[in-house]
Structure formats: structure tokens, C-alpha cells
Length: 222
Image (cartoon, rainbow, N blue to C red; front, side, top):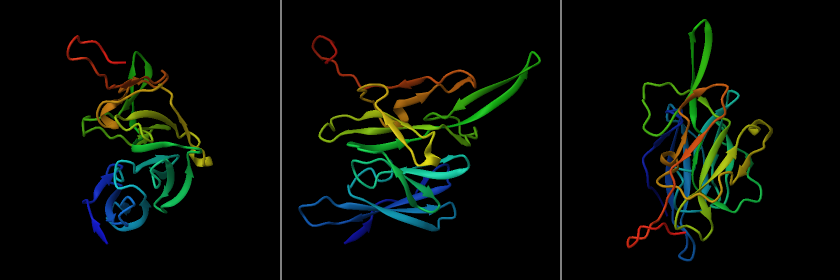
């Protein structure tokens, strides 16, 4: 038995759309999902099955690198993988992964160049949740993020860093770069890359973290 459980959801600024189809399994198993992928003209270009009933849309994240389209996705509930677009062919995956993804995110940006004091300046403006829609974010950073948890630790979502700089060579790196960080809200709400910085300066990241306090004495729970 199958049934469509969502409307088509735009991805990558309308370049791609996805739609989730529910697949009912036998009683002792999780229901799975088939994720249908469409191009900007809403022609179906491919699909894949995810072996978990939730997070099929949020874990599908298209991005462009060196002029080629890819997508982060999670066919297995404990795996971050990459496919090519529009071919929808498996490209590579994170090795020895036990982190269960609930959302992937690759931030976009544009470079603002201007002249001041007889000198050209270049500033990188990175997209953030709720940003001005008039900005044309056409480039993707060579890194991304995944939220989720190690199996069994699903009381909150944690964040890990994805290195996409060698994706053309079929290599993707994943690090708990910021330690054991519990995020507040969705991944896009929790992560802010310095939204406007000089092109030559290093990136900084703001992570909205989840913290718990005692209602009686106001002390933070460890």
C-alpha cells in the first residue's frame, strides 16, 4: 500500500522539487518513504527509497559545486550520502557513519564587490533563515551541516560539520567540529554563518544552542 503524504516541496531556490510517498510495511517494521525528485519544470527525474518514515524532505539538500549539481540525502536512517543531479545517481557517502540525519543544510552566498578609497573591496553575504528575498544567493559554500543524533540519543538534535570541498573527487568529510552541541529549532534556524564579511577573513559561525535550567533555582542542568 502506498500513498502520497506531502505536496511537492521546492529545493535549491526552485531548481528542484521533492515529493514524499509513504510505503506501508509489515507490522513489525517501520514504514518507509519513497522520495520523488522533480526538476524546475516539475518533470520527475528520479527517486530513492528511505528506510525511515520521517525527515525525507529535510534531509534532501541540493547544492552546486564547480558548476555541477549534487544533493545531500539520507537513504539509510544512519547515513549521509551524496547523489548527482539531474542524474539522481549515487555519488559518495560518509564512511563508517552512525549518526542519524534529520536535516542537511548547505548555506548559499553572493559576493558584493564595490570600490572605496580607490580600492576594490569584496564582501561575502551568506544567506540566513529569514533573509531578504531580494538578495540573489547563487553560490554555495564548500561546506555544510547535518543535524540529528547518535541512535538512541534523540531527546535533542546535535550538529556536525560536512566538508564538501572535495566532492568532485567523491570525498565527503564529517566532523563533530563544534563538540557535543545541542541545537535549538531546525538546523537552518540554529546555524548562522557571519552574514557579511570581507572575502579574505575567516568564517565565523553562530549556533543557537539548547540549554536547560532548573525552574527552582535557575541553575543550568549539566
